Structures are given as structure tokens and as C-alpha cells.
Length: 87
Image 1 (spheres, rainbow, N blue to C red):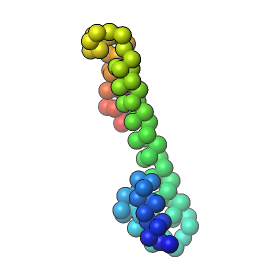
Image 2: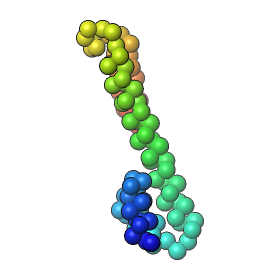
Image 3: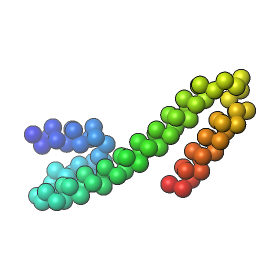
């Protein structure tokens, strides 16, 4: 049962040290803390991936011959770079 829990935790993106801490914790509150910490990190990664995907889709759907000359695409790219620099 523990092996399966560890496998599921890895699929959920938990690091090996966090999986170890989760499985070794005798206190349910400690397990919740591990999950909370990873939940926030995963949401941040998902938001970054969503922004990157949106940028790619904007480039693919752009009607300009050269996407690098499109003001809308360039604006989105600048915004993505700015947000990435603040993280």
C-alpha cells in the first residue's frame, strides 16, 4: 500500500524528499503540510505552462506572415517575459 501511495505521489509531482516525508509522517497534519506546499508549487507551474501554451497558440493563429512582426504577438511575448522575470 505504501509503495502505491509513493508511486501516486510521484505522479502528482512530489519530489523524492517530499514523498519520503509524506510516507514517514506519523502525524496527519505533517502530511497535509507536504501536500499544501506541493499544491502551491504545482499551481504555479501550471499557470506558467498555461501562459506558454497561450503564447504558442497565439503565434499559430496569427494572421501575420511573420509572427515576429505581429504587434499582438510581440505584446504577449513581452508580457510573458515580464511575468517570468518576476517569479
